[in-house]
Image (cartoon, rainbow, N blue to C red; front, side):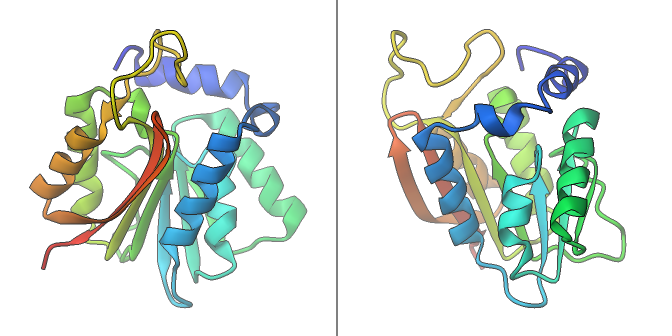
Length: 204
């Protein structure tokens, strides 16, 4: 990870007010739509959305889920997400501090689906592996990861990310991490050479 957790949290808090407007690329919108579609929660499901930001995925799945736990490291992002929940009258989404390796899920809560969109690429490859192992340890029936990821060789002249703060992985590295955590990829969606969605379910 090229910046500390606290540095990332502060950076995103600074941009929370205009974050939604800044995420207007076709790739981001397509990725978010795919994550929500593949999450496909059932009526009684609990969805954990890690790196929830201002809640794009959390709100996207809320209508079909029983409960959504939106977790983020940025106080500013969480504050904006909470404001949006109030504005929209969404009552089954709970926003709070949490991260991939410690998502702060209540002890009496079973998580059915884990989602994340455009968040894990801030971690190093080793930290991504730890993060996937941590969310897999919650034993969800499905994990849906949308993110910056490399399907081929990245083009340094046309990066979809900021090399000074981001650290995307190849699809192969992510697939191996899911396999080692006891999950198998059931869908791979390439939005672009540098953006995609992975869906993983328990191998058993």
